[in-house]
Length: 327
Ligand SMILES: Cc1cc2nc3c(=O)[nH]c(=O)nc-3n(C[C@H](O)[C@H](O)[C@H](O)COP(=O)(O)OP(=O)(O)OC[C@H]3O[C@@H](n4cnc5c(N)ncnc54)[C@H](O)[C@@H]3O)c2cc1C
Ligand code: SF4
Image (cartoon, rainbow, N blue to C red; front, side, top):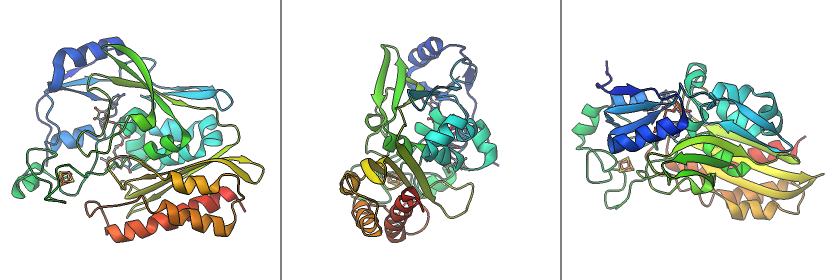
């Protein structure tokens, strides 16, 4: 049985206190929300913080406010279960409710938070292993080693962005509010990520994600489809997040974002562009799905084979668009 290493747990009750604790403790500290990803990673020694700054005691970090008409704010500490069951979110941002409701299993969704899902670590078959397993293959550059075992000549890590909600939030045009030692800032979710398996977030370590901000949803339809080996529990090996603003049967705006195909969510703007100003005919859907599968370049470092995952991108985009086109 894998055990947690020793660590100190600090329990601030306000965001400024949490920011200060993170700044005071520097690189030895990490934030923890639901802990559903962080604690397993600590057991496998992928993370080795000596201090954890817990966010669960911060009042006001959980809950959602606003409306589809004005836009919504969801506290980073809101559980995925609460996001998926929230009436306004489920009705007007159905892709987000679906994505949150497809993460892992019910037990985890009751602990896991939206903020933790947005910030969740990238994944790779050579990294998400016990310390002994990783040691046996001489580690890799994401933790304790020097080279990439998936692409040995590569100077970078290709670990895969595996959050279900991140691609959907990207398609919805969401932003995040960050609180840090220099105050607060709001950044588009697309600017929160970078295409690097190790430094996959642009935020500073001491910055805390406090809110996820959704723009007004009137006129928008959204959906999220997830590929995984088992119907529950598993991380995505492909996520397809589509949002369309409709005017009757005509598409006025479109966003298609792919999850689990790169180290960050991967938008497919060329595919979205062919939809604008058009009706969602079967021919157009096939054309857009074809174009959308082009930016998906899955590597051989998650479940199932990467050629299969690439082929499924086309299939899933077409399915998502057919779903949004209605009967
Ligand atoms: C068996 C299993 C299956 C899983 N399946 C899925 C899946 O299908 N899809 C999926 O997306 N995830 C999955 N996960 C990963 C994880 O459960 C979810 O991503 C979850 O939403 C993480 O949220 P959390 O609150 O538990 O985050 P934590 O584990 O507490 O933290 C995750 C990361 O986010 C950081 N963090 C947390 N909150 C904040 C904040 N407010 N500001 C800044 N940084 C923050 C932490 O420092 C840490 O780096 C799975 C995990 C397990 C163990
Ligand atoms: S992509 Fe390469 S460096 Fe990154 S976790 Fe996998 S093996 Fe390690």
